[in-house]
Image 1 (spheres, one colour):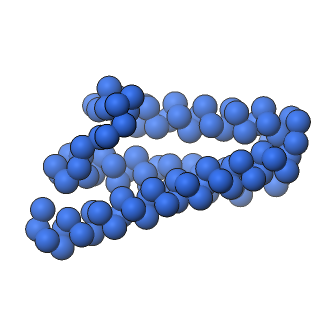
Image 2 (tube, rainbow, N blue to C red):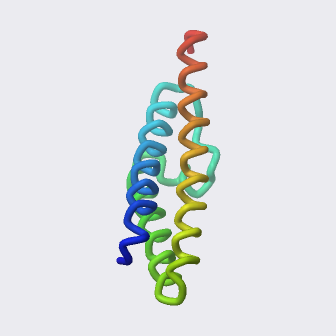
Length: 102
């Protein structure tokens, strides 16, 4: 792996872990349901689904890096940013739900 991709990759993995933790917490507490029909199939094994998706994204980025490290870097940054927004949204929903007693 190119050194330039290590930071964004670690951030992507971290945000992905936070995403699955928050999603699982909200589903188990009844605050939310899984709206993604593919992920809903893995309801009991949400961690396996997320692990598969993260692995798939990282494999695609590594393939892109063979052609252009710069493109792979920005692809990883986009994925990291998108995942970070999902985590912020989920965290906000959890805080709001807890504040109103759900």
